[in-house]
Length: 359
Image 1: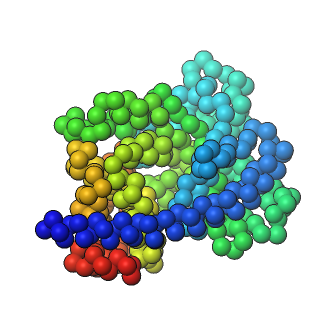
Image 2: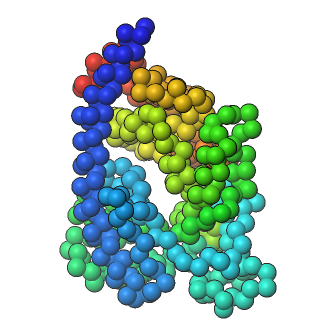
Image 3: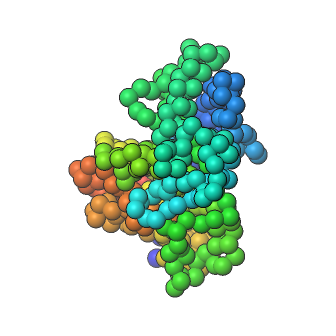
């Protein structure tokens, strides 16, 4: 048994060195290329409208605010200033979303974003995005990369297609630190020892983002109040939780397997599903020793089996917001197909670790 485990870990480490590192290097090269173009567009936007200041910056060879969705798809979060005059309200009526309401006694004119405040005093995510979209469209025509970049039409999101190969979504957002959403109040579960009080305090201090984008749970039934809502995002908090042990290596292998074998019709699976299931696995196995390098094979198998189970039940709850289903709106046939493909992959890896050389 131990010999079989060791064989799998050996093959996974080889896979990580050959496939995952190659994927990372290729993505890093793409990011540099894409960020040059996006920075140029955002510089033009700032000239027209100084309230939209580019927050895309390179720190230790990583771009702050850039999320890799897939090797050809990225999201850049543009942090906006001055959320101060608004109260953050999340009463759970819109899973995964919250609203920003003008604080009592504060005048509209005190806000930097005065013309985007609705009659009932909410700062409208949709109105800000609509204005930003107009500015980006104009900037694309003026910027020095205008030959290789164009806006993607037929969406309320701000999406650019670069060199006909890459798609970048630019999302206006507010950073919220020092508060924690009520809809995530159940975290951490009292009976679960992971991640421990110190890490919990760090994660909560890290806070979350409020993004101006289409919300998972609202697609197809947006009333005006809902389209004014902001989407909760916990990227930094999640990254902090995944520090230590073989967690990040495990995520890297999962992402590489997904990119190569689970990019399926109907797009049932993205890398965020992989990250979410890894977080649940950390809760299930709270001891640090469970995340030693030697356990990489067991952890990977556990997560793939959990993924199959979620796909079969057609439900994948968000880690911090369990009322939000990350499979919502995905075609059932696509989820069933993904379950079959994942099972094929898991069986292959488990019964024949050497197969990783071809995967």
